[in-house]
Image (cartoon, rainbow, N blue to C red; front, top):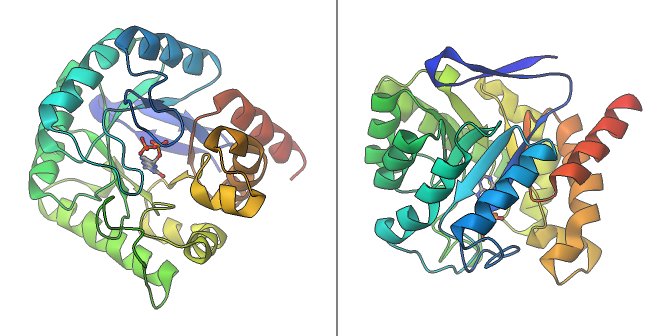
Amino acid sequence: MDFHLTLPGGRELALGALPGVMAILNVTPDSFSDGGKFAEAAAAIAHGKALIAAGADVLDVGGESTRPGAVGVSAEVELKRVLPVIEGLRGAGAVLSIDTQKAAVAEAALKAGAQVVNDVGGLRDEAMIDVIARTGATACVMHMLGTPQTMQQDPRYGDVGAEVLDALEASLRRAEAKGVPRERLWVDPGIGFGKTLEHNVALLQRLGDLRLLGCPVVAGVSRKTFIGALTRREVPADRVIGSTAAASIIAAQGGVDLVRAHDVAQTREALAVADALR
Ligand code: HH2
């Protein structure tokens, strides 16, 4: 099925039978996998261009790590990291998204050229919904149990699939109540955000259920801890095959529209072969 992701200004990100790739660009010193590699603007911009050349549809620029236990940074620090990178990559060939939980960061990034706000907080902050409503931006609404500081301390659910679905529906309704139409919202189950290995597996096995929400579905599995647990790979950069050749493919077959990935070329290749053999 062809899927069109509607963007501000009426622009459409048209995806074919294959899911699109949302490439990860962390301008941080401490992200769990690529922390420190692209913390300088020049390095981040060069990496962003390489990700576009490798086939990224969306570049997700982040200035604050949300790995379990991460210490948050101020809006000022986040902006200092992301704004020069967004300005440097505007018009470079991919849709730019800002990965932030802060309304002020989202608003400034949208002004600088981003079109999508990727909020791992799932629009829990009313000020963030106000920014989305006011600017006409698209938002990716991710599910997280608690905060990055607390989320992996014994997360519990009765039925993880149903609870994530209900929580996402509640977030979508809060946005709709403030005038944001569902066509401008994407949903993401938040793999690894307040979930055990079993929760992540259950969510990835039932990704298709999220389509009931009537929005494009995004999933981020890239190099995450659950891949390390299943492959016994301690070092995140060693989890590429588990991420690209297995989890991304299963997610795509489960009906995901955008795969969030560090390894764009490998993800694209795996998706192309899996699609041909379907
Ligand atoms: N995962 C991370 C960050 N943002 N956004 C969405 N929509 N979905 C995800 O699964 C997701 C996300 C965590 O990964 P990463 O950005 O690589 O690491 P860090 O938070 O340490 O910067």
